[in-house]
Image (cartoon, rainbow, N blue to C red; front, side, top):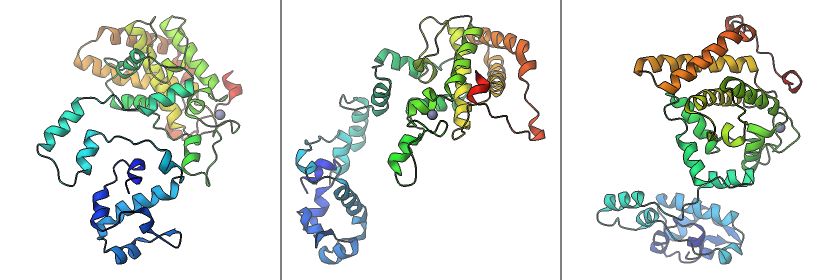
Length: 325
Ligand SMILES: [Zn+2]
């Protein structure tokens, strides 16, 4: 059991020892892990031991035998130590607060690590901080922030991840191009079918902000504002990017890229809501300027991008790589 605690940091050895189970081999019969009812009969286990049993069984089924010897001892966090204690210590709430307040240096933030690995570069802590705060004063919509965070935290189930979870019933190939592995980066950014759409989005940002800002992954997916954009220009860019992400997420398993006219209408709808709130709460200078810049663009271009009335139930024309070029 002591060896298993190296693999399962939260393993409560005490509850097993109370029922005289000291060694892993006691769980086996004829080379196979015994079923829970059989163990209950032999060791008089209560029903509440079912979950610890399943936890142990799952671990034993998926652990290579040598791992039991190779795995270095993993130190439990303060909170884990409190939880695995047979009796809760005194002042347990104060101890929990203390554990929360004092950040632990050994916490490994997996989404950061995954982005670094996928981008093959390290994003500085300063840029991560900018990514977390780039929405402030620019959007009042929690859906926008939620979407931004879902991408940042890699919440979306892309084909590669689904295939790892269910290898028998899924493929790791991209849903659009059906040629490359559908990683997070490929699905959101580098797929040959979605890239022309992103190029159009980049061109739109340059046109409206009147800059030559490059549409990078850091800006478009992680929402790290480029150094050379003013606050008003970033507000404009943010609303274009969040509308783009909304459309990509809405057409998640679609084989084609979103329609550019749909994107412009989506941006306009977002701005209509934002401008209502801006007027209600008082004008924010950057937001008012960004709103004005958008309105001018929309007035000049809306005739070419008016969508058919949804009441007619006309399906949106799918956009392919060719039509976007
Ligand atoms: Zn693809």
